[in-house]
Image (tube, rainbow, N blue to C red):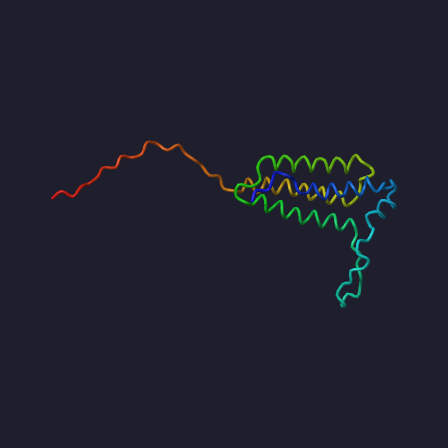
Length: 155
């Protein structure tokens, strides 16, 4: 199965941008953190030993999806014949876009985007590292084939 040269971390990045820009997120830090802390599941109960509950938020979902897709990206890179140069270029462009949005767009500055940018950096560096670690197949131009003389049994 061939997976197209497409950075899968674009999916959580696009979802993050939909949450930030389509929900008309306010600019203050308190209100920004409230949007990403909207619980998806009201209470996830922990084992009875801890006797606590933990809300799962939109931010948690985005980062978890990013981590799972990073695993798929690494599996794509390890496959023989996988990770062409376009995969590396697109991963780098996505990382630069995440970092630029984190630095220059006040509305998008959040820990969620920071974690996505870190995942994008890990994707880019892991792809390059795996590509460099794979053994290279060296094809040497073969010379003329040696002549084979037939030994016949004449007695």
